[in-house]
Image (cartoon, rainbow, N blue to C red; front, side, top):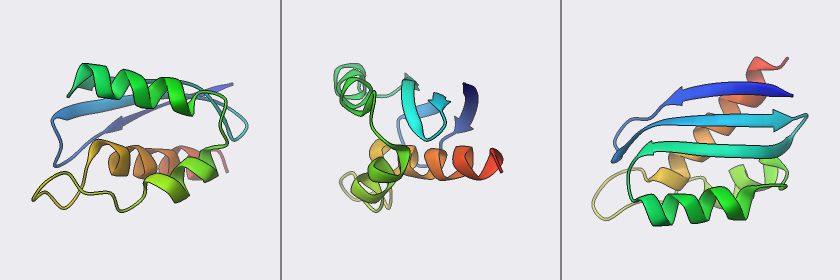
Length: 85
């Protein structure tokens, strides 16, 4: 099991804490942001392969912003997987 902390940019959330078992997401916790929506994202992604989440969430925008919390999660997961190698 590995843990990774990612500082977000361009979103209401400021940080994402990730726990992975290999490429499987065990836990995700967001700091700040829309609490209910982010709890939902964390619960939906629990048990999923990080690569599937990256594919599904990458490029999602929030209103006029160039990014979103799901997009930031995809970036965080990419970094977490790269850090393991």
